[in-house]
Image (cartoon, rainbow, N blue to C red):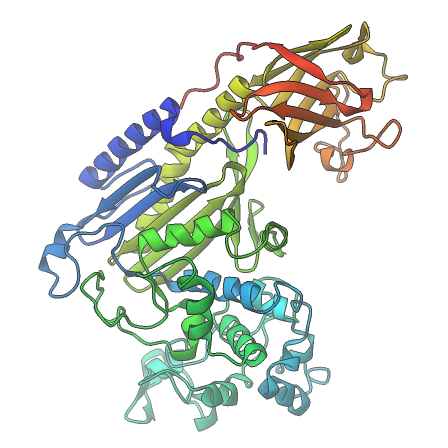
Length: 561
């Protein structure tokens, strides 16, 4: 991140202005059916939107929209609010993996082969030799727990009549393949379950082990619901407890998610009901996409991750990382994260957004977590156009709200950290600039020496210095806290090195690159008081602390939202 995460967004006038603007844009979008992010259908599709911070249990921004058609609903709600129950589709995958991290020792088993925990797959690996025939047989022994969590096992997407065209064309036990001129299938080629009810574990493995692999394991990412069902089976084998009970005890109960359930709610009076999907049972495949949640509960789930309520900060950092690439250079995949990288503000710095989306016929959900700002977004929709409507809503938020959060973070850093610091014959000036990321070191005088003006041949620094927070901090016991920063030294006059392996952005390899007596030249500490405002700064290589004496005015421009 460029700055420490902002702490007072609820009272920030920039956020208030952005919230007002977003409400106006949503009003216009609903009224006209058009927006800068695309067309929007509001007659039959309802939605809930919450933008929230990790430190506040009340939304920073909320909007709940009830489509006119909801007035004709024979069951369930007619007005959407924070406690309306939606189906969340593949957001359930997040619940499944989160539960594993809580109940099965974090990610310690992610490199273990799945055959160690699923006897049916161990038998399949022995019976169907993938070394001999890798085209037709899955190499089960090479698939790890982590592959399943990150959708890099590269096995089939589905197994049931729901996910196979053959199942949809079976009628009265006879194949109706003539409609599309498809060849008639043999008995063993038709899914044996899923048309009139969910597959049992035995039925699933009996049929699915005959599906062909997509790639060799860990070759690439390929979407699969089956991977999470197998993942859940492994978790059940390890713990000896059914997945539903595990999720309830690991997540729903500790977070008091009373509006959430793994299976069909007993009372549908708080639910928004889309016929044909709301009460559809997925059986064991619920682990991939069958749960029910409210907007308030989904926000609480995301907040628990950013606040490290159920797993440690260390495990969270390991978990929130990409594990596979996609064909989109701004999109990566985690376990089960869908990670987007967004250019934000005039500085065009990249902000990583950890998301999980979920779609079923008539339902669409999206959870977004932005660790740089300790911010989250919850989107849920019900209706025939839920998926495109959610895409439009997320686009409008990215366009009209998120830039304001970056401005608010910069302004807070300006007020709390920027200024002139001095001690004896040393002076250091910190500023912010909307066109540059991080805190700028505009002046650095140490013992009468201008550090930024030193010749290249003799300096371990650089003419341009910008500081970035590391997230490390230490409470000192005297009502002050030390915040860690690292500097990036650059020379704007240097000629860029081109070619395939050019160093257009090589700052990650320069961290802690040069030091003096075991202290990196790029290591800085800022001492802040209980109010978050800086009282001192330490360029640690100089072994001195400079006291804040003047607040420096921010660079104007580039902050409009």
